[in-house]
Length: 129
Ligand SMILES: [Zn+2]
Image (cartoon, rainbow, N blue to C red; front, side):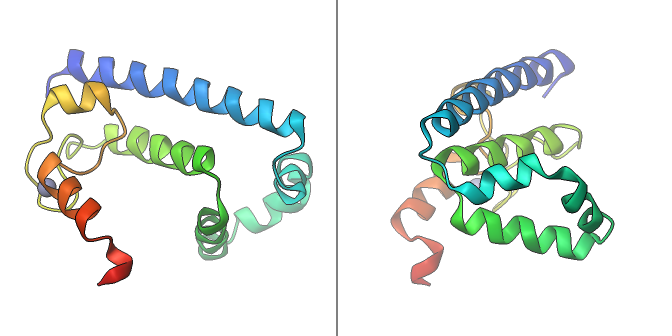
């Protein structure tokens, strides 16, 4: 993948991120998002204490991911894709290592699996293993 293609994907990811964030803030106004989520964003002073402890932070993040809404999970996937974008391995399937077609990345910029592995995952979710 060349520089221009990566820049294009980054653009798509950032746009998508904005959409999802907007959706989430709308939902928060409606009050349909749990109170704990508001507490996290509202009380950063308490949260930053834990930030120093990387292990705890990762644990919290995983815990939150487990209870996350579709939008929160999407945001997580987008952030993960943005992080991967900085690495050379971006555009490779995280499962089999083969290249994810650019067409797929343009449609689903946060995709981390190639079509073949995605189909496999859809057919056999990891929880059934
Ligand atoms: Zn694959």
